[in-house]
Amino acid sequence: MTDYFRPIAETGLVRPADAVPLAGGPVWFALAEHLTRAGSRGLVPARDLPGDVLDRLTARRAPLAGLALDRPRLMGILNVTPDSFSDGGQFATRDTALAQARRLVGEGADILDIGGESTRPGADFVPAADEIARTVPLIETLAPEIGAPISIDTRKAEVGRAALAAGARMLNDVSAMTFDPAMPPLAAETGVPACLMHTRGDPKTMQDDPRYDDVLLDVCDYLAARVAAAEAAGVARDRIIVDPGIGFGKTVAHNLALIRGLSLFHGLGCAMLLGASRKRFIGTLADAPDAQARLPGSLAVALAGAAQGVQILRVHDMQATRQALTLWRAVQGHEGGQ
Image (cartoon, rainbow, N blue to C red; front, side):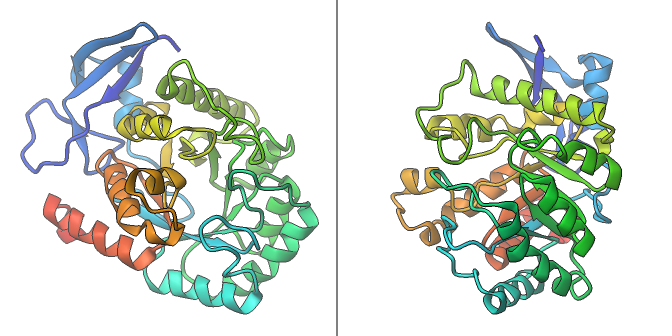
C-alpha cells in the first residue's frame, strides 16, 4: 500500500453537510489525512476520497455472533491461566473462573473472551492439551447458560476447534493466524468471526527492542496482508476483526501512535477490536506498576477508542467500563448512552 487515508473522527451532534459515517456507526468524518511513507500530504475532504477507499471507510459492519456493531461492544477478559499479567492466576480454578465469567456477563459484557495461554511479555508456550483442559470445560458449562457469545483466545487450531465444539462462537488469534497453518481453514470451515491481531515475534521475545519504520503504517500493512490471506483461505471479510495489538511488540511511543491513529484501520473494511486494558504502557505513563491499579488509564484509552469508532473494546473492569461508556455516549447524544 502506498497511500493511506486516516479519517479525522468526530462525535458532535452538529455535522457539516459533507460528513459521512465512519464504519456505518455514530462517529463521523468530513476530512481524512492523506498519509504516505514519505509523510503526510495534508487533509482531503471525505467525499473526494477514492471510491473504494470511501466505501470501506463508511460501510456499516455486519453483525458478529449475533451482535449488531452500531455501538461499541464490550468484550470481557477471562484468563484461566496461572500467570496472567493482570490477575496473577486469580481465576485459574474452575469455581473462580465460572464466578468471574458470570460476574462479567452480569455487569454487561457483550462478549466473553476465554484464554488458557498467557501471552504477556516473556510468557512460555502452553501445550494445546493444557489449553483445552483449562478452557473447554468452562465453555461447555457457560455456553448454554449465558446470553453473551463466547470467544476463544488461542493461537492453536486444535484448541479453537475444541472450543467451538463446546459452544464458543468466535476465534481470537493473537498471531493473526500465522502461528498455526490450520487456523485459517478452521475459520473458513466454521464461518465464525475471527480476530486477527498484530504482533511482532512471540510472547517470549516480542518486547526485545521492537522497531518499526512507521508503526502506524507498518501495522496497517501487516493487517491488510493478514486479511487478504484469510480471505484467500475462504474467510469472508465481514467475518474478520482486526486488532492493532497494543502492547504486543511495541514501546510506549508505538502504542500511543497506534491509539492516535486508530481510525486508519477502518480502511481495511473490517470491524476493529482494541485491547489496551491494564497494559504496561498505562502503568508506565501513569506511574501505576500494579496492573490492577490501572483502571483510570484503561478507561481513558477505551473512550479514546470509542471516539474513533472502535467496535469492540476488550476489557477487564466491566462494570466501570460500561458505566464510563454509557455516560460518554449520553454526552455525545448517542441514543441516551445505551
